[in-house]
Length: 77
Image (cartoon, rainbow, N blue to C red; front, top):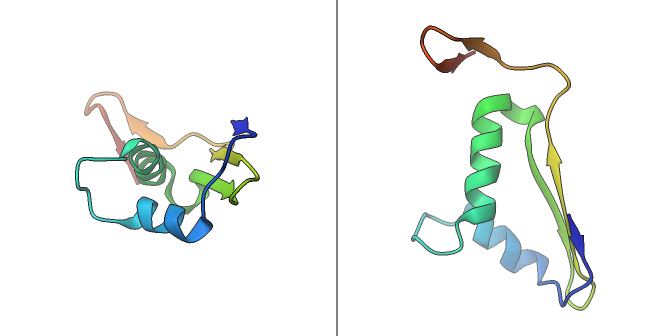
């Protein structure tokens, strides 16, 4: 996803993505965490942003699927 809006300071974005869950601004952090839990280091979000330059969000998903045990309803590593 990409927009040409006001963007944000990259340092502020990093703090937002790694901060403790305070119940606010959790959308990107939640998606990134879930992708990393499911796909490991090969999955996650990549966010590029700068003030007055817009924001670009890429979702990384590996070509291979995670191992999934349908009987347990969960992903195994």
